[in-house]
Length: 323
Image (cartoon, rainbow, N blue to C red; front, side, top):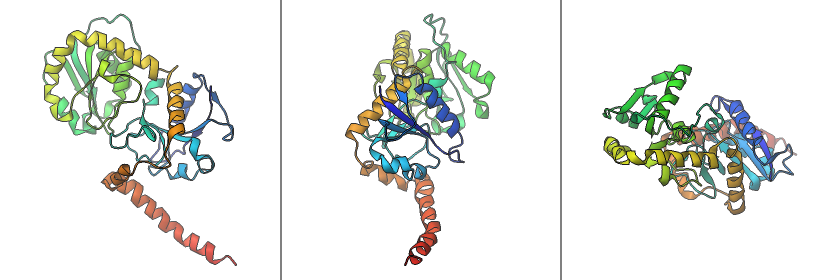
C-alpha cells in the first residue's frame, strides 16, 4: 500500500471538466488498496489530476511540484497535450511515448461508467461490425462511413453523440456486434476502445499514431487497421468472425485486470512508481520538435511568450526597486 496525494487542477476554458475528472479519480482511489493523504511530505506519490492550461504552467509552478519533483505526476484525460511533465495520459501520440516519462492509459470517465455492462451470455450478434459516433471529429471517420456490408451498422450521430437515447442505442449496438470499429477522433485514442473492453467486444482500432496502454496483450483481443486501409475492413473481419467471441472474452479479462473500477487506480499508482524509480528530469529531446506543429506552437509556445512579455515589466520594476 502506498500513500497518495491527489491535487485537482483549476477549472479553466482549456480545462472545463477539471472538477469532474478529479472526483472520478478520487472515486477510483477509494476503491483501491492505496491510502489517500493530505500531506505532500508523507506521500509516496503526488498525482495532479489534469492541468489548467496546455502548457501545464499551473503545475510546473505549484509548490508541491517545486518541492517534490521526483514524486509528482500528471494524470490527464486530455485528447491533445504536450508532455512537459511526467505522467499517464489517456491519448498518447506514438511520437510522445516514453515509458520513463509519458505513458498511455484509459480514460477515467470510462472506468467510472458502469453502464457498459458485461454478460457471460453472449446472445446473438447479428452485426459483423458497427460504428456509432460523430464523423466530424476526424477525416478517417468519413472513410469508415463509406464501408458497405450487409451485416454492418454505421451511424453518424453528429452533435448528438451524448444524448441519453443515443447512448442506450450505442450500448445495444456494441452488445449485438462481433467487432466494433474504433476510429480515432479529436485525439489519437477513443473512448469506445475501452467501452468495448468493458462489454467484452473486440475493438478494431483505426489510428496510426495511437499508443496502447502498457500491460494487456492487445494483439490477442483487438485488431489494428491502418487509416489508409479502411476499405479492407469488411473482408478482414469476415475472416476473423469465428474468433470474435473468444477475442471478446479476452478483451473483458484485460478490462477487469487493468481498467475496471476496482483495478484502475492500483494500475495508475503502479505505473507512476515504476516511472519514479527510473525517470529522467525532462522528456526526450525528440518530443520537443513537435512544439513547432501549429497547434502546440500556438497554445504552448506563443502563450508562454505572451506570459513572459506581460510579466517582464513587473520583474524589471521589482529588481530596480531593490537597494
